[in-house]
Length: 321
Length: 288
Ligand SMILES: Nc1ncnc2c1ncn2[C@@H]1O[C@H](COP(=O)(O)OP(=O)(O)OP(=O)(O)O)[C@@H](O)[C@H]1O
Ligand SMILES: [Mg+2]
Image (cartoon, rainbow over all chains, first blue to last red; front, side, top):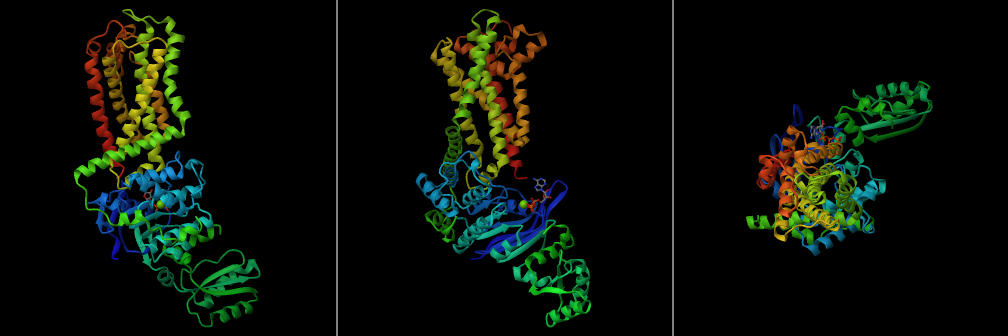
């Protein structure tokens, strides 16, 4: 398959605020692309432009090979949208909701009912009966919302933070459903705040910040780009953790802007060169009389890469673990 | 969402969606626009079935108004120019019920926008007009039922329309005014986006309704107030409806009262055109 989503120089302004400032994005057909970025980066706005809900102020946007500005209706026939806020009818039950949306997708009466039942089965809401969506838990509502986005098994599916508010089992179910769709040929563009979600699902990651694309690539490329490995130490005495971090950083030859010391007894430093570094650091700490309980040399995580890319890593110490 | 989630959801619906038919002609479009509007309206019908209590309260409130005005206040009311207050009142309350519809429309629109349902519709391949057309269909149907219930209550307290033909025209005029308030409600609903402002409109509806001839003849009001009340679109419809039912109209009144039937058509048509234009503009503004 070719390119499922093609965005060139997308600009969107709200009043004087430039929300999207020349976004370029390309998603290959049949792949999963994760759009990451801090709150207010413009993820939802991008999704809303791509799903014909918002008209852009500049740039070219094609979804499933169709120009969004010129043929919004044709685009709508090829996409599914699961928005950031669940958008289902609160009064109706799960099945009634899905039958309604299927009818509005121009399925016949019987086909609509059949499709509704399939979707209920797919998202595990088959046993909710006529219970109104108002009485659903947040997770159930989200699943219903996702089912509503799948009525026509779209060519391109947009998911805006699909697993926010779900329990771990619910998240896994959504992931399974997404991967199932991808196996069936659907292209997925999802936004998320969970880096592990991007790592699990996405072939490509695109990081937005302040309405611009600040990084893109496979999860592996992004982590590699911010400087390979991390050395994690657990020191015995929390009072000496800062001292240990300082020392380890000097010995390990960390790049400037290394991750900050962890919390409590845990210290994380970036490693410039892998061979021999564990021995060197432990020896140095030993010489300084700092007892080390545990050592781990590992590749940087996407989390760390993300925080570096968006320049938020200094703030991380303020965020409770 | 357990085992089946891993299955690839390839279904007949899927393949149908993949092999998209060629672009539709305008007849297909029209047909779908109508079908979609009915599908959207059917959602309201499902709501009524689901929440019969709310429906009943909505239908019976105007009946309560009728009974209250008739038995609690009606004793002290005399209709200038003669006729029973009951026969004067029933068309007035029918008009009031029409005005109350504004709140229902506005609430529905605000709720759908707020809950994201409107955006869900807008991202679907349905006819965009169907969202609003469906609202119109559902609200007009509800109003028709409401007016029928109220008229039936009127019959129960002894009110009778003179002739069937003009009575049907009278109900037509009431629904025409409802259409004007429908567009006003859609426009306001898209404008305010906030359930709290619905309450404000709900309150403003009262002085609007009372500043008319719905409950008392305008000739009993001070001069300038009488003129304002007379030109109230509600007053035009109520007077026209009274005439059509063969009910007392209340003596006096100027040009607006004398040409009530004309105004009962012109007002709603003008208001519908104005507010429909504003509503469509506002609708397009959603994608800004
Ligand atoms: N309708 C609107 N009117 C005015 N400003 C808006 C509107 N929608 C979004 N914005 C602004 O655009 C910016 C980007 O918002 P957007 O919702 O796209 O961010 P996001 O990346 O999805 O954030 P989050 O992670 O919080 O969901 C924000 O500063 C927001 O205030
Ligand atoms: Mg968002």
